[in-house]
Image (tube, rainbow, N blue to C red; front, side):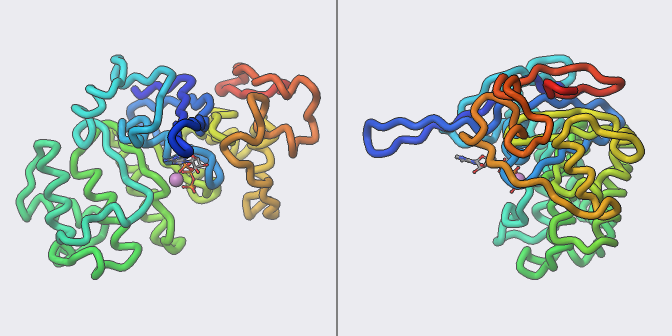
Length: 303
Ligand SMILES: Nc1ncnc2c1ncn2[C@@H]1O[C@H](COP(=O)(O)OP(=O)(O)OP(=O)(O)O)[C@@H](O)[C@H]1O
Ligand code: NI
């Protein structure tokens, strides 16, 4: 199991020689994932989704400081352990296809992923992994610039899944895919979860991922505001006013997207949503604690 509790990430920047500036970008991210489960982490651009992924993998830039508790398979996840597990038991499907090495063929890069994890990395193993993503064996010989956007994204996923990691974090795995390809990609991630993998899908696209998810974690301004059963979102009612706003922005509910909130600096310590919330009151300036609600939990003073 992956358990992340009150994760905080701060960047330190120097303006000139002496002026040091700290910027908090993650300010209380909680999420966990169990084997066999697909957890959707939903947030708008800048909410801190990729930073969460990079914090779990231990690949944040050097000027980042991390606080909070992270554990994986019952043991704390510190930098040394992250280095040991990365690419083996924990794998990332990165957000941008620019993570592909432009100088190496797709097949070689999938092979690197397999070798790093101590898995078979011969041509047959590579072709087998590509086939899982509906990519012909000949794709192995193509360089990144010869791949279409959708193919590149599937190669990126194959590089991660070939490791057979127990935890897979997929950062916006459907960006740039048409609706059919998007469903194929999510079906595959769902299948990995059904096979026992812990899958965390990071996305801003609630409607695409909702049918495939077991649970949903809503990230707003660097903080998890609600963790709920996916069913609560599908049929019932999410509780946090921000989650409700996201839900009512689904196509079937008539698209009225909530306003964007920047991760840093804007809301201080208080509730991230208080500027746009019709239930906001004075207490919302105090950071809300978690409240258990049914099978989920929510961080709202008015829950
Ligand atoms: N190296 C960095 N130094 C300072 N701030 C950063 C750094 N990387 C990211 N940030 C800031 O942290 C916040 C969260 O960034 P992050 O990339 O995690 O967002 P995201 O939710 O993944 O967004 P998107 O959907 O656009 O990918 C943003 O406001 C971003 O500007
Ligand atoms: Ni991102």
